[in-house]
Image (tube, rainbow, N blue to C red; front, side, top):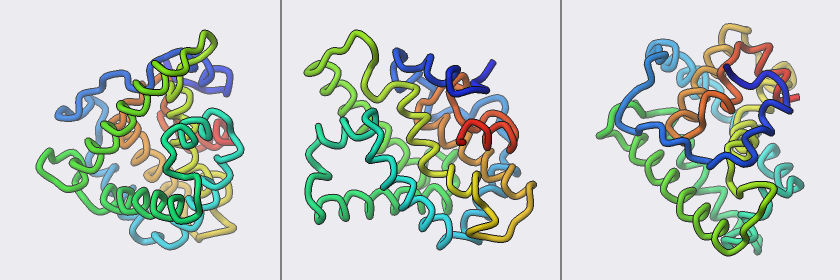
Length: 204
C-alpha cells in the first residue's frame, strides 16, 4: 500500500526518515529504461526544472517541519549561507539527473550516499536535543514534503513552465520514486509511487 491522501502521508510523522532501503541494491520494481527516460526528460528541461525547484524550496521555508532542521544546522541563516547551501543542493540534483545512480561506482550514487549521510547526522542530532512526543524530526512525512519540493512544481503546473506529454511526466515522477527510495523513503510515504494523476493530487 502507499499514500493516496495527505492524511496517509502524515502517518509517517512518527516514522524514522530513513527506512533502511539498501543503497547497493536496486528495488524489485525498478525499470531502468523508464528511470532513464525520466532523467532524459530532466536534462532536456533542466533550466525550467531548476527554476521550479528554486521557488518550491523557497516556499518550503514557510513549513515548520522543513524550517526547523534548517535553523538547527545554522547553514541557512544568512543570504550567503543560503545561497551556498542551495547551490550545493542543485549540484547534487544535477548529478542525479546525469549519472547512473544505481551504479555504486558512479558520482551520482556517491552524491546520494553523501546526502543520505547528512540527513542521518542532522536527524540524530536534532532528535536527541529536541525530543518530541508528537513527531520525529526529518521523519518519513518530512522526507515526502522535501520530495514534493523537488518535483511538485512541474507535476502541478507543467503547462506554465514547459511543453511536455503526460507520459514524460509519468517518467519524471518515476525517476523521483527511485531517488526517494535511495534516500530512504519507504514506498508507503513516497510521493511518487502512484501514477501521474495520483502524484498530482498528493502534491496539491
